Length: 289
Image (cartoon, rainbow, N blue to C red; front, side, top):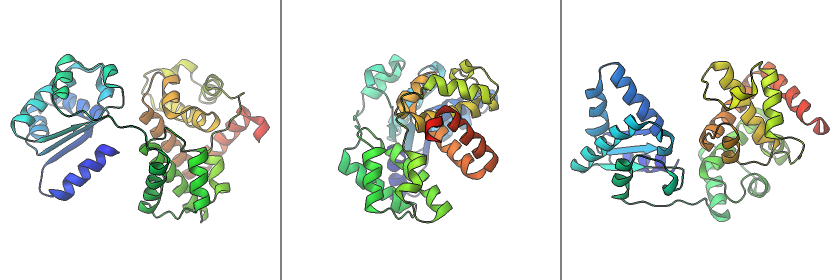
């Protein structure tokens, strides 16, 4: 989100400038597609003949050596053209596991560590996000969100995700109150509900293997089951997005957040799906039903 903000500000300041702003995974995919379709020259034109180049979540391509090498070549040419390049990585720099050539190029620039916002900053960001989506949040609701959901360590992405969910509740039933959003947003503290128990229950429901949920499978049924399991893990445990991602095959926290958003939207749009997941939730924590 921070990178998107920089990109948006650049576009606002230089509306005629050419910009390439993608996730690192999208960059790697675009590069692979250009090789498959014999359009490498077009890909390189789009990523080099520009004024602003931005890649988010660079750590997610640590296993894609060819994409990293292509990125090295792109950064070299961008520097020769005096273009701006901005990269983000959600991992400690000494644990990035990037190829040496890419690490050296990045270290030749300015590296800035970004830490999670403190309470006053989280409050300001929460109110800003609420205002941007037209949500009227009472001071009581804001205080409750900061005390129980968006605690110390919460990132801007988590704040934005939280407000999007609250906004969905408000659209469905008018004013957003603590009572209306509590069930959706506050993780249950029950010690009986664990990630393995959630994975087992979801695997039974979707008729797949438990190990499929932590695998790299991209099959539609497996992906939906994995998203539901991540959503329930966030809802029924006290684990953070990052901790949940680790339990699901060492996935990035942004993947977990996307899964939660996707499942929450499907719950709002599909009554049959919502009933099924509600029954699964009751089976996992009968004392709360």
